[in-house]
Length: 421
Ligand code: HEM
Image (cartoon, rainbow, N blue to C red; front, side):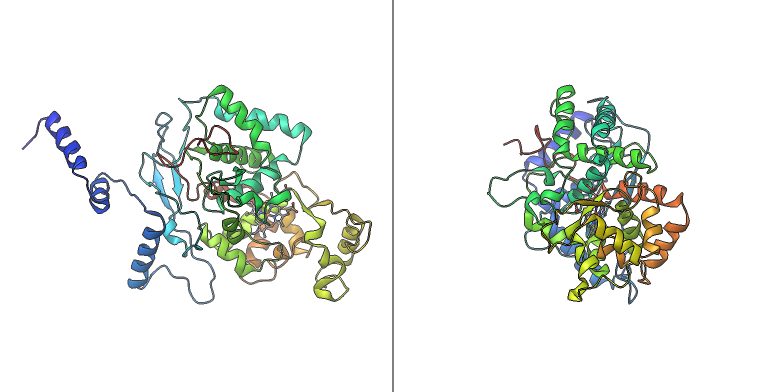
């Protein structure tokens, strides 16, 4: 029987007014192809279900990292823009993550349907110049700050790795008075990209008030930074919204120190949905930018309290580094920045070529070459000059879709340093 349209609408409204349970709502929306997640509870339930089913996706013994299990959704478009041509949109499956620490920011709800996801051209109607504003801003900035692309690429990683790509890293304070992500030991003074976004957001607000989120400002500028540095250019996915919360403890638990082991780093990348091959490619971001002397100085002067350099470092490299960084035990020590490689503004495979020769600044990077789980990828990236910029662009784009807030979740901040209320 075919019901008249007004009657159908009335029935629909009535069914929602009769205070449906969460399960009823899930069933209702699932019927339309919507998929709602309820943060940590849902993840735990899914993990339990996987375990009960024997978890076919589990890694073989010895492997440290699961294959990513993202959902690839074609033809998605966001609420602020016109429907673009079909594009692959990657929403990593948060069920692949292990249980989070107690104060981890739960995504309130991740909608993985083809209305609330990310899309290329998200601002085509609501702010058609958004991508151009980002590109012009960065092109101008680079003239006075050639390190800006490196600063922003790191900023994007530090935002996404901590609860998702939601600009939580840009908040200066939160209502509860807790220390925010910026205050984490892994951010602090070394996080140079955060302040840069203020100017970009101002420009975006001037043209389109409260339209382009801070999370998209980070993602768009990181995408542009990557392309300028030599990664394969692609149009950015938009539609992220901004977090209402930020906690230093979450950053402490989800980022790693320059002495991190492969197992520790693998755990971080596994949470983001990346396996160890992908982790190695993404660490190739250390092809751009710099590190402060105090983060690797013990390798040059006093490795593991031996009063000698790390034995894996080639002597000429040690001598170079000693010239650049005075011994921290002396009054001459100034803790300057040292370039990761000889081409600090180019996202090229020089970093990998150096790793093969044991020339890594950070201990965390130096372990990649000789470990059987990561060494083959290091050598593959070092040998093929064209592979890394292409592969990095793919994975970096995927990284910037991690655990995003979309649709009606979060907010679009007026200023990136504080929430709207
Ligand atoms: C979990 C593994 C990682 C560790 C332990 C790590 C550690 C570090 C450290 C210690 C620095 C130097 C900070 C300073 O002294 O200013 C640094 C810089 C940097 N990192 Fe990472 N990192 C990791 C992963 C990544 C990833 C996945 C990316 C991007 C996809 C990235 C991008 C960068 C960039 C671009 C810089 C240079 C920043 C600048 O010059 O402003 N890192 N990283």
